[in-house]
Image (cartoon, rainbow, N blue to C red; front, top):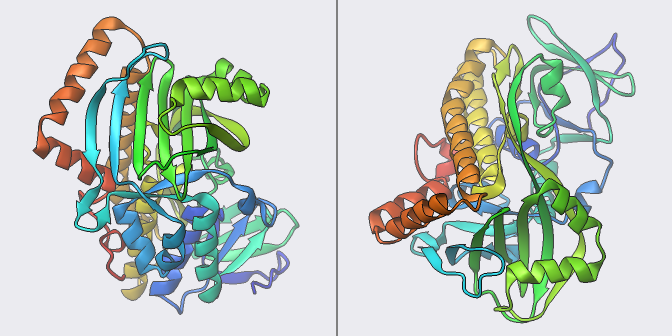
Length: 414
């Protein structure tokens, strides 16, 4: 275990990661597995065990599944993972009696390899925690980073209880409202969409057969994502004032509104747990790195869930950062030096900005009811549906199997 010491007697680490979500855990596991000699620790502000109450689920793209397999986590996750076998996209209004399907996707990028799996966050987090424990990665829970100072050879990290740690590299994976990003003086580009994302899990009578559906409605996209068993995860974008009203309403009102959007194709619906809503916006950090400091995951970028790529962008950060750090250490270079960290930034910045712009355009294009725009987007969806090569391109983009891929996303060891 990490023995925290006073400010006058700091423990020296190679890498300290702030944030024990899937990005922080995966970064720690990736580095420690490749370089067992490196000392890696995680500090997390959330109380111990809070991750077990996370009712959300995430779409894990094929590339991220390959990474998790390489990290020794996928065998534990797979029994609880639901492959997405196909996907349909519609564009309509809530009151329309028929929702025409404009675009469909088959679910495989290779024989036997779905382009994505749906996994509950607590399952993913639990598997990564087990692997971190096996590798001897120390986890300090319920403890926030109060401040840090960057020196020539290390960064001194001060925790809320007054103890301190020294590290060659500090990684901030503490979410879209990252306090460490602010402490580092890194500015962001940010704007709100006036929407909130309602998230809940729904049980239904009939099987979904692995089908994912995304309905583009005037207030925003409504996604039905298959989970293990006769259950689905709902990601429902709604105007913020309406979303707040819906999650505060009683079960009967909420389920009635949900049923209007979900439809009756899977029979009677029952909401599991309490729905929650999060404001939706776009956040892009102007820099991903500073001396002895790197951002990863939502701390570097927060995007609209319209394309379901938030988690997968975070895993791309993990794979690129781990490869950069591990290679630098093998070459005897300083893993916290700015010139080393800028390799990571150069690797990830363009892809992140591109995805941010793409989701922003899609959000603005599909979250309105303006007649000419509806006609144009429906024509575009129908055109893509008739072009197999274009559909194959989009599937590979969604699966993460395109571009300059780090080794872990190709399923290769570092």
